[in-house]
Image (cartoon, rainbow, N blue to C red):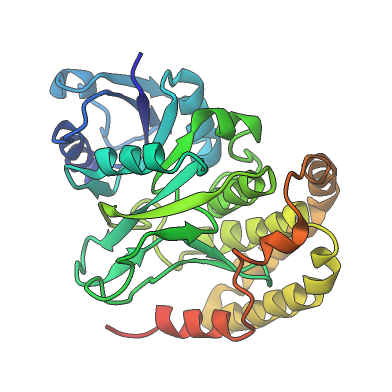
Length: 330
């Protein structure tokens, strides 16, 4: 039985999947299996995949439709045999010691159940793509250090709110305990939601700066696309409603609403009004189901709500600073 199961999600990833798999053949740690879940690609991504990478302990599962990031990864976990689940996007290319560094961090820090990689922008390697995920009291989330200098930032290991699932390691036991990814999300924000539920269940996440991955980012869906706006903001609302415990739900709800209204206006002016307003409408329409999920989640909280503030971003101007950094020309 392999100690680690690496799940690589593929959807029309012919331009990146070969490089991703090549980096896995070069890993210094070898006790792993690779499970490729294909979301019904149409570009020949998976032709002769098992034959082309005989060095990998590779299993391929092709789905008959695009079931999205959340469902496809959950399917991958069902096939997994390892104690640890490593999620890796097809457009993420780990360095040779990536898996070894994550595993060593897990062995040295048994109080943690999730581990986040140091992501470097593949097309701008002088910039960070992320050093773990941050979650703000408004419901917004972002990757720590995004677009900051890779030589100056993200160099120290520390606890973060949650890992970015583009390149992350999870305890399989803890992943299953909280039900895995929420399959209603389809795509976007599902890793933040999972990290939130893990944290409410008493699990913690450690950022491992030595575990380095080059990440293209939004290779399948496109940056600032209507697709990303719709699923990102719909799921952002659901994550806040489902997971934010009392009394913080009522205390931070006005800020959450103001934040959603601000981005609704901003995106409408940018020409994506249809996507953002449809996201809000569908989020509200789905609230009864999310409230039922909330009841189950809040019933099983293992931490004190005040402890959550120690790992959330609480500064009122942090989202503004992050917004400006994201839109800064490098």
